[in-house]
Amino acid sequence: MTDAVLHVCRACERYTLRELCPICGQPTRTPHPARFDATDRYGVYRRRLLAAVRAGAGSG
Image (cartoon, rainbow, N blue to C red):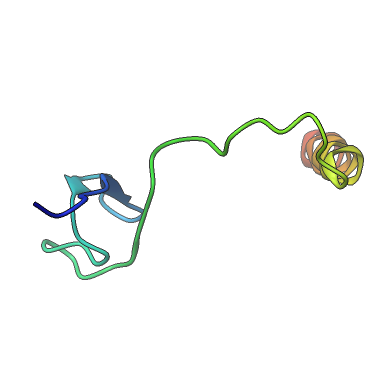
């Protein structure tokens, strides 16, 4: 038995078990969030970047 991983298409949002969407041929991604790691060394920088992006998006 293979270890199947669920994927979702970035373009058409359909779920599949393949790396490429069988409907539109676009690459797929995993629909699950990344695991939480309390020792994440770069989390501070990632949150800072996200806050800056959100602040810039509202001022346009």
